[in-house]
Length: 97
Ligand SMILES: C[C@H](O)[C@H](O)[C@H]1CNC2=NC(N)=NC(=O)C2=N1
Image: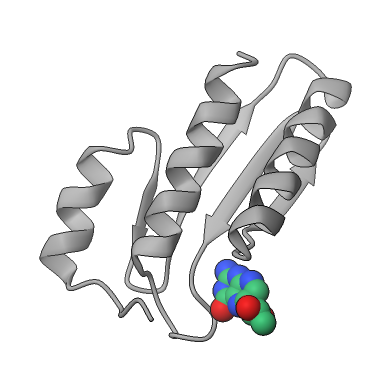
């Protein structure tokens, strides 16, 4: 089981995740894609990764703007699993924009 990150650990981790911000409650990033179809393709790839990891982000879809929010519901905060998921979301975004 991963535990909730200490505030200093979270601050350090966010330095390695440009574009992501957050606090003990969750981390998030917004990304604007070239269009709606691309945004949905990103959501589809992230969904496959989330199923693999058994760890799922909250996703807000507004036309071509996506907001991903990662927190570990069962732990009530941000854990290493959220950092891993955020890094994987970054890989997907890097592949399309
Ligand atoms: C049973 C299953 O492992 C849990 O419900 C998982 C699924 N995905 C999850 N995703 C996130 N973000 N937090 C969780 O606590 C969580 N729990």
